[in-house]
Length: 63
Figure 1 (cartoon, rainbow, N blue to C red):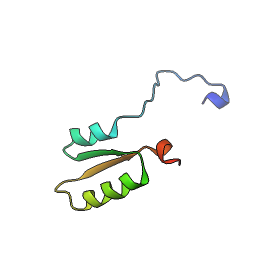
Figure 2: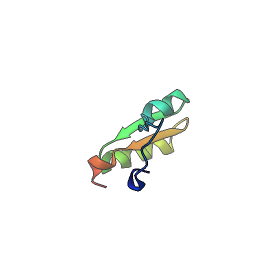
Figure 3: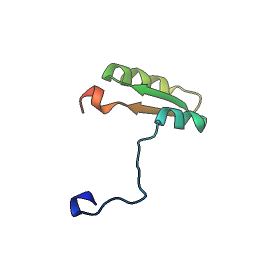
Figure 4: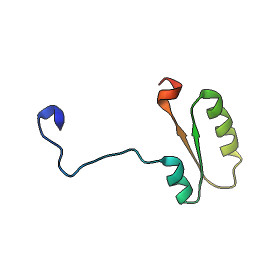
């Protein structure tokens, strides 16, 4: 919208804390900041007793 010269009205989008959001719904929540952490978190998620939300900090990983 900004590119078209239209000012946003009534919109304030923020990225939620996905770890806390997952926990609020009964899942495990994990935030990773590196590839090694992602591998470990994925392995633990595959054997978890409930759903797992893995939030990847793409900026920290370099994506």
